[in-house]
Every structure is written in structure tokens, then in C-alpha cells.
Image 1 (cartoon, rainbow over the protein chains, first blue to last red):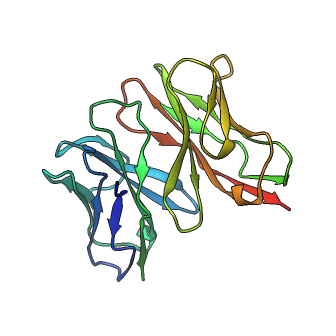
Image 2 (tube, rainbow over the protein chains, first blue to last red):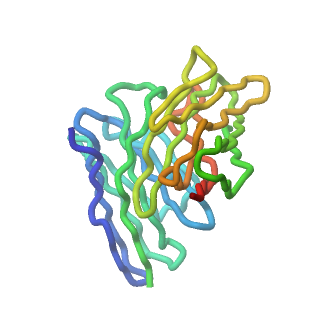
Image 3 (tube, chains in turn red, brown):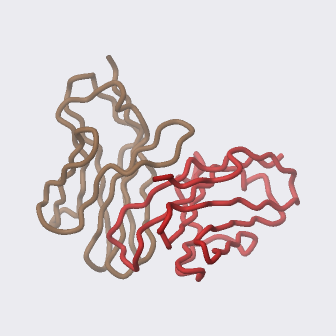
Length: 115
Length: 113
């Protein structure tokens, strides 16, 4: 079956702009989580959506937002981009139920560069 | 609150030697523990998980991990390392009530021929 698909793979934006990243989870998966990965901060949890509702949220400013559609596809938006937002953004999908025991399946990520 | 520590930024081993990548965790409830591997410019790939049962968990590519409740550890091991095992390894923990995983900072494993 198809894996987690993230688009675009690479993105270059200017400070102050906004950006929208997309994630299509594995078919049947209802949970989608977003992570920011940077060399200095490691893998940081942004938020998790389950059945179109934000279920968990990390410690990121309000410039970072997301949503999930009825088909479980998710988008992440970052407004007023800062240089420090340059990172690899990873999306992960999980399971078909409300269970914390399953492994996450990650997409290849979107590499965002802010100049 | 849950947390994960991977005390080593780097682990270097010779091909054919056993390898260990360390992980300790802290959770308020029962832990669910995971190991992932990341190759350059790729997302994370699942290796193995501990939910309950045997303390020794076997996973992909010959890796295994040992859950030690008293030491709150979940070290990743492999009896004989391959050069192709060179990658970034992440340990993650999730407690019974949490919907999110907390990842360690990662350990870069380098296997030299």
C-alpha cells in the first residue's frame, strides 16, 4: 500500500511569507502528527490530528497551525516565516483506531528553507 | 510529562562487532517504547516497539531491544553491525494516556569497515 506522502519535498520562502505543507497519510489511518526536525533541536512535536480534531499540541507559537480533512489528509501552515523556521518538517500517520500502541509511519518530509 | 534521553550523540563500531545504542525514558504510566532509524534526507523508519510481554523485542534488519523497567531503559542492540546500519537512530516513548510520542535527540551510528 502507498506510504505517507508529503508535498512539496523542497520549498524556499522569504522571511515574512507564509507556507502550507501537505500530508497524505496511509489509507485508513486517521491520526496524523507533524514534527519539526532541525540539527540543533532534534525532532520536535508540533501537533497531532485525529478525525479532523487537534488531539495534541506541542510548544510552538501560534504561527504554526494545522488542520485535517475528512479524508484524513492534513495540512500544516506557518505564517510570518522566520529564518529559524528552516527545517525538515515530517508528517507521520498511525493506525485505524484510538490507540497509542501502534508505530508511526513517516513521510520523507518537506525541506523548508527560509531566506 | 514524558521524556527520553539518548546519552550518546555518536556511536562508532567496527563492522562485525556488536552494537548498542542507549535510551532511557521517563513516563507517568506504562511506557510504550519505539526505535526508529533515519537515513540521510529521508523520513524515519520504524524498527521495533515494546508494548508489553517479553523484555527482549526483535525488530527489523536484525535489531533487537531490551526493556528494563527497573533501569527505565530500552537499549537498541545488534549482534553484528553492518556498514549499511550507519544512520541516525531515534528512541521514542509514549505513555498509556498520551496521544503523542516524545523522541530522543537521536544517536548517529557509524559502522566502519
